Length: 149
Image (cartoon, rainbow, N blue to C red; front, side, top):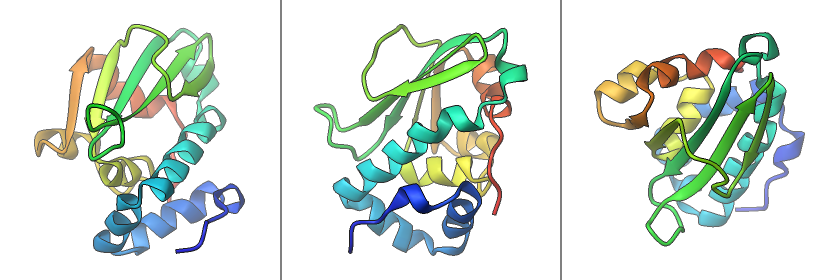
């Protein structure tokens, strides 16, 4: 597979790609750890653009993301999202104590953030695990303007 230029793909187009591409094909792309890292890095790099500042104005939270089948020492790829004072930043490093830690496969994450899956359904079926402040986690998606296909 060629090296994709993800910076040129807008959020709605990405959501449509996730919706229209067969699961087996998306999982195959995510099994390539170089492509997977590029995709996750691009998604997390755009997170601040999608933050609903008015909803996040009073929020102070650190979210740790753990993605299964990863390259990390413990088998996870990791990212951290920091929301404070109506702003959002992300890093692949742990810099603070997590209010919530969310663990899932990158495929389920991509489906979730593009409106192609429901967090409660993923949680109830064990494909999304949450440790920490469950009430905060339940409202987390509402802090972001999610692209739709």
